[in-house]
Image (cartoon, rainbow, N blue to C red; front, side, top):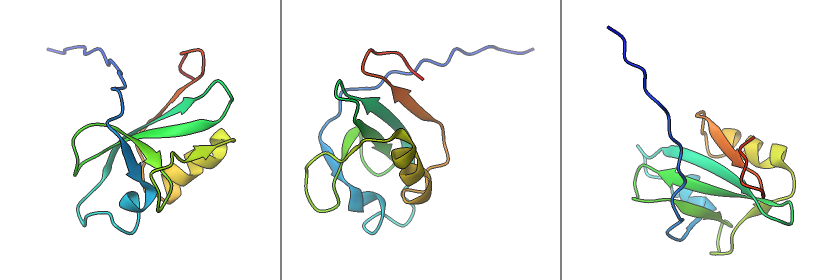
Length: 102
């Protein structure tokens, strides 16, 4: 007997800013990035909304040492950073400024 499941993706309102160093040098030993959603602003710049295993909720990704939101002009740059620097191998959701997912 097989069961079909529908996958619903809903991005919750971010609860604050998580500094980039929390995903790199200050990351807990068994900590992992659970999900990443990239959102494109009206100006065409991208920002990341992350969910991590050691905190509840979702957070905007901030710069390394400040609570200012980290933004990227090119989608390829932020995807590469998610893969290599944050060691995230899961699916990355991309939302454009008009609300459609790519």
